[in-house]
Image (cartoon, rainbow, N blue to C red; front, side, top):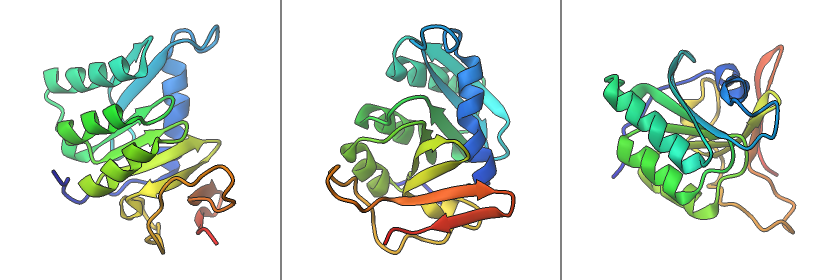
Length: 176
């Protein structure tokens, strides 16, 4: 299953989603034990938010909330705390959400599925920037990647494209 193209989102909006998830987690100021998943439209408006002890349950909860409230998935961003595992990306693809952003690194199989399904996957979304793993065309002003990216072993010094959002706007740097 391949997802249709679109929507186009701002890098600034995308980079701000983890802060909104962190504020929603009830234990984030205590133990940090809960996970959060949220659905946002292309402008950053919150459509659904779910917190659970397990990230996969939080994702499924956000998807259920969206379905119950009639949210159209085609223009949504799924933002999650933690890593994008294969089951999380599978859930996003099956629910037809075109963009997933995570506060940490995605797993390799999740990146491969995202690429095959035309899902945009952004990791390490925090501190005003993010890494682009698949689908840079859904970020406003982001040039296409020069080569496909697969997660590399820790010993490999190359990195995926990193987008920095500064006062001058989007300033992407591509891997060497």
